[in-house]
Length: 193
Length: 416
Image 1: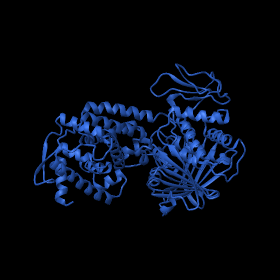
Image 2: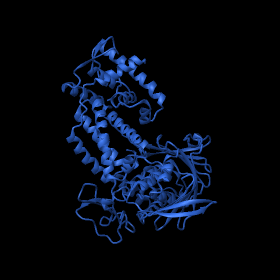
Image 3: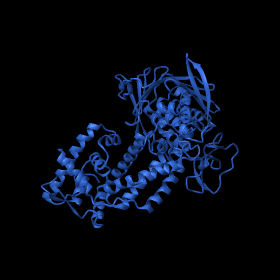
Image 4: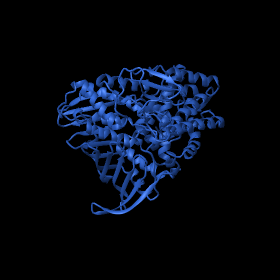
């Protein structure tokens, strides 16, 4: 795979094989984070079109380098899409309408085996900062390890552990607030538009 | 967060009820689009003038020394436009070169009929570079911070370019300095089965045996001499076809040396006057090109003599002298003003648009000798990607669309 990455800068077929290899993982990451498949496919398309246009500028030499670069671009694209609260709201409404997140899941994170609503979970996630969302997404939606997340986001390994812990604490707090006071309003907390 | 909670988060997100399976139709459709984008990005000899290169030139530009600036900008264009070429025996040398965490070397740039420019170059991952030019001028580039700093000890002036509109992923993806660009070129050359590399055998260089390789590129040949023991380059010579011909020699390489991070600090030393300007790092457009030509023709009342690096550098220099000094030579030690730097950044953006056009655009330049304001004289034309009509720019800087390219004596194609 490392050789494929090196060849992909000038070899179209090699680049096509890289696409075949990484497309499912990037699509899955986008679907888990964006919930609505059509939007996830659009963002996935943006990611790979950017990669194709910039492959000659990629300076890594291994498959792991390429993977980190891909997830960095994907994370930036997802964040850019979610940065507008109206989009977050529409996304959740669409996902709820389509039945994607209308189920509940049992978890002891809020209270003993209390059911959590996926819609609330994603609303709460949307209230975190871009970086916090990125860390949680890369960890739980992309399944990346801490050191890889650190490389993707360009931060220290130790920072990822601390930031992830804090982000999850905030997420849990938001969920508890949702449970106590009803549904949160997406976008209001961060005050963005 | 205890382990129990950590497991709970894992368990929770594992149960996210979304279908992540691949839709083959979307995958196939996207693959076609992506490969088309790949083809476009790899059009033959697509000349992509890196923003950082132009900015680096602009930052260190001093009006009376346009010749030195010309050498630098020509070298930058050279570095960013060259295409691949390979060799099998080079694999290990290039691999070691690519993996180097830091480097220190000398660079000498010479152009026919112009003074030689010498500099000491330092590189430290990730993508920090520092150039110490003969005469004491220092350039420091921190691409991730989006900043270039030039320190002139003669005038105690710090010139600072702040990049704006820089795409986040570009900070990590772009080649940002001579060292990274060269590494990428060599990496591509080794990996490309169609490239031509000639073995030059052994020779003695500075008291040691080195092994040489010549990269046979039609426009910019390159020779690399490597130490067979360390398997690292010791000297790289590059030649840019003229006129005027330019050569850059990099030698005395030291790899993985300890370099103090303070060398790459963009903090301005005490006692320096700061002259600051912004550089728009977003993709330049035709409008930027027109703005550049408008500024320059207003200042110098003529078009560049050509579209090679030296001609552009000379043209920009003339514009700045005409605009800011009424054509009078300025003192050597005079520092650029913020207005000059901002103007230079805008000018660079416009030329960057033209120099970045792919070969398929059939871009031509015919401005040499054209009189600004002449509504009948085409000076530049190109075909935008995906369109069939040409965009023709006239000497009065009006733009018309045309089904065919104009026929103008002396017109030169930007890329062959």
